[in-house]
Image 1 (cartoon, helix red, strand yellow):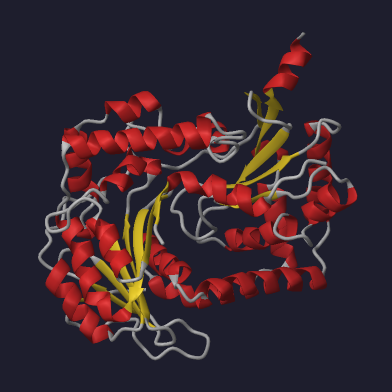
Image 2 (cartoon, helix red, strand yellow; image 1 turned 60 degrees about the horizontal axis):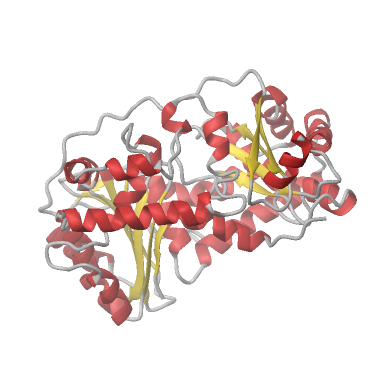
Amino acid sequence: MIKHGRLMRAALLAAPLLAFAIAPGAAMAGEPAVQSATPSAGQVPVEYHKLANGLKVVISPDHSVPTTTIGVYYGIGFRIEPRNRTGFAHLFEHMMFQGSQNLGKAEFIGLVNKNGGVLNGSTRFDFTNYFEVVPSNTTETFLWAEADRMKGLDITQANLANQQAVVKNEVKVNVLNQPYGGFPWLDLPQLANTNWYNAHNFYGDLKEIDAATLEDVQAFFKQYYAPNNAVLVIAGDVDPAEVMGWVNTYFGAIPAAPKIERPDVSEPRQTEEKRKEKIDPLAPQPAVAWAYHVPPKGTPELAAFRLIDLLLIQGKDSRFSQVLVNRKGYSDSVDGGINWPLGDAYDYNGPMLWSGMMIHGPDVSDDQIITDIDGIVKDLQTNLVSPAELTRAKTKARSALYDTLGNGNRVGLVNLLACFALFDDDPGRINMLEKEIDQVTPELIRKTAREYLRPTNRTIIDLKPGNAAAETAK
C-alpha cells in the first residue's frame, strides 16, 4: 500500500495557480441596498450595491474580529483565456503585483506586510481573485490600493519578461519536473471535455507563454480588468455606510470597459467512456484517475451531487474510503471532489467535473479499482440511501459550510459572496445553501446517480511509472 499525504498532495496540486502566499437584485450607489435587512440567527449579513460603472460591491459586516477581508474578483479565468495564449490568465495574475500608478513593484505586498496582514491571488476556471486580510483600521488604505491597480498597471516589457520567466519556472517545478505533475488536475479536463475552452492546458504551453507580447497584456487588462467585470467584497469589522463612501471615492470614477462577449463554453452530453494511458517517468507508483461530468449549475441534481460527493469520496467514512482503503487496502486515501483541487462546488460558472484519484501499489490493476468503484456506484444507483447515511452526509455538508462561514480570516466567506455576485448577481444566495442541502431526498440522489455516474459519462486516465512501463515494453 503506497503511503502519501492527502493534505500535502492537495496543497501541492492547488499551489500552481497561486501567485503569492504572503506572511436577487442590486442597488445603485447611494440607494438603499436590496439585501440589507438585519439577518436572522445563523444568517450572513449581506449588503449589495452596484456603482454606475458596473462594479458590484458586497459588504458583510462582522465585528467579532478587528480585521477586514477585502476581495476583488475579476470575471476572467483560464477557461476563456485567448487561443494560442494558454496560461495567459495565470500570467496576468502575476502582472497584477508588478506595480500600479502610485504603488511600485512589490509595494502592494509590502504595504500589506507592514500592516501585519496577509494576501494572496489565484487563477481559477472562471475568475481571477486578489484578497488581503488586514487590520480594520486600514480598510480605507487597501480599498485605495485595490482601486489604484484596477485603474492601471505598470505594464512594461521588463515586468512582462520577468513574470514570463516566473510562470515558466512554476510549470517546470510543479508539472514537468514533479512526480504526478499535472495529474490529474490538468490531464482530466483536457481528455473529458470537447470544447477548447474547457479542454486546453490552462497552466500554459511554454512556447505560448513566451509568445505573449506587451500589446497582448495591455489589451487583456483593458478588456477584463474593468469595474463592470469585477466584484469587490468587504467583510469584517466595518461600517457599511462608511465603506460605501470610500468605494465611491476610489472606484467610482474608473471607466467601464465595453461589454465582454462571452464564448460558448457548453459541453455536449458524453455518451462513451474515454480512457487513455499516461507514462510518468518520475512517478514511483502507478495511479488511476477518473472524472464524471456533473449536473448543470442551479439544478436540484447538482445539489444532490454535492451530497453524492460526500457519500462517496469525502472523509474516512465515505464509501470509497471504506471499500478501497479500509477493506481492500489499495492505498491510504482516495482524493477528489467537484471542481477538485482548484475550487469547490460553488466557485465556477460553466461545465464541471467530479473527479477522483488513487496512487496505488503495482499489485493491483486499475481495472480492478474501476470494477470496485462500479460496484459501489451501482448500489447507489439501485438502492435508496439509508436515512442514517443521508443524515450523516447532510451533517457533513452543514459542518463544511459552517467552517467556511465562521473562519476568522473570512476568506471562504468572501469567496462565496464574490462568486454568487459575479456569476448569479445574487450574493444573498449564501443564506440559501443550508436549505439546498435539506431539500435533497434519497430518490433524487438515486436519480442523479443513474444519469451522471454512468460509465458512458466517465473519463479514466491510467498513470504508469516510467520505469515500470519500460520494463513492460521489453
